[in-house]
Length: 220
Image (cartoon, rainbow, N blue to C red; front, side, top):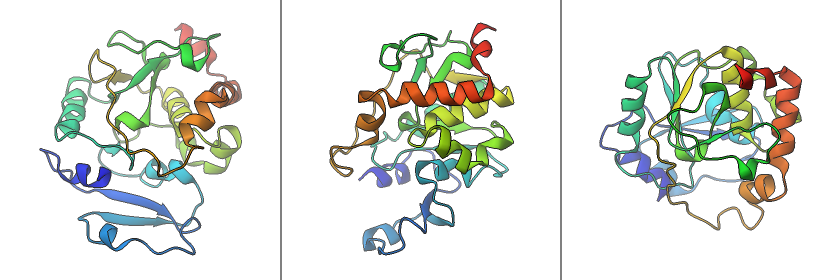
């Protein structure tokens, strides 16, 4: 199971936190197997969907690593992120990145490399991303604004918040790594279909970067 892959890493995380919204689980019970796992469940009073996995931990004194609960990560996954964080202290690091190209569609952005400049590096959360303390602008916690500008794409929001904070970013390696995902739990209308196939990622990326005036950062 995807969550269990996080519990079977070769290096154990200090704490594994599953963030859930009370609003989304108001009329549902947690499955018994979930309560038996060795992780902490953090209940949020906000209705922020995928944003909550990082927003609720912005004040953490140590680095925060985000992961998706429908993805199977190899046991070397966390080690890879920690090694990269050691090579690039103070930077946000992730496995899976694209290089933003102004004027091009999201589906045409090339895979990022180690040479991709920080502002243009769009890390996608499905690969796993490590955030050092203070890596994002304090505006990152404004879930209402985030959902108004990009209601279904937290990657876009966190990218902008990193650029606003002036925090560098790097990929773990030259490779664009795809980890296996468990399909079918969200039906046909998955976030991938909702965002990429319909062009919503392009619209939401533009809305966020227009709002904060970030386009010039791609030229620096």
